[in-house]
Image (cartoon, rainbow, N blue to C red; front, side):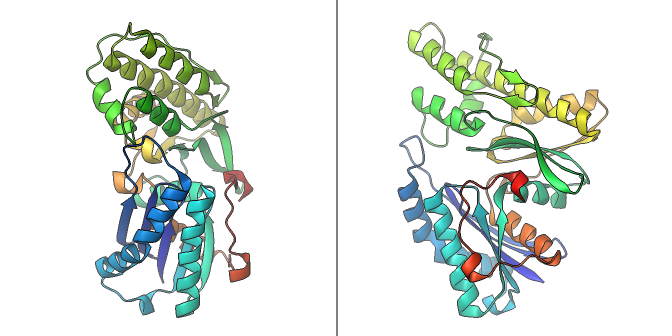
Length: 322
């Protein structure tokens, strides 16, 4: 079986082609890059419309197949930005109807977990899922995907982007903050907000922004201090979830998981507790079509089907709704 997966939840339009043997034949990413410092939903949707056909064609070409060889069309049904989700759903429906290929809608968050398991040796991990809008600690427990911890306000990626905009960076700001933090020499104390396995970033963002406006601290020191603080919170929460679930594997997913300092802190924690740490390569950490295609295959084999009339988007669908 060959599945073409379409990802369009936020700033990236992605098309991946995956086989039921777990082989990724293509993974085309078309991210929106802007100097404005954030995502404007209708502009992101226009970007997706503009690159949609090109991305599908590039993926088919990279996979060295034509659309007639595709057995299943999978798409991100939610959660995500409504404007962006609609473009991916429209593209998936069109391909399904034109070529009479079965359609399946899947949950974006779970896609990150399952592609990580496919591409690493992780068997039953706790997933630390860190992206722009999402910050969750997910595990499969008692026959269901469950959220054991999450942000109580904004996602970590959005928080980093807002602070990046404050200090003059474009979008996305995370990579620039990581680069500048390496030059930081002094830790500036910031609020440390963790409640059980839940975290909160709103107050930290306000505090670090006020410190920057005061002119008393360097950008490098604030970037360094911000990363050290929020990443320590995430690692603490993830370790607590591993203990509660009695799991000995930690898997990273989401665009923010590309941060080398976060990877280093997770690796250290796992080493200290005798656990295994896994992180896929960057193209499978960021939003991508391959993860949507792979999850589509998994759910199709379990009997899930999506009819055209049931292929509406689910912008607010939670991981534990699945």
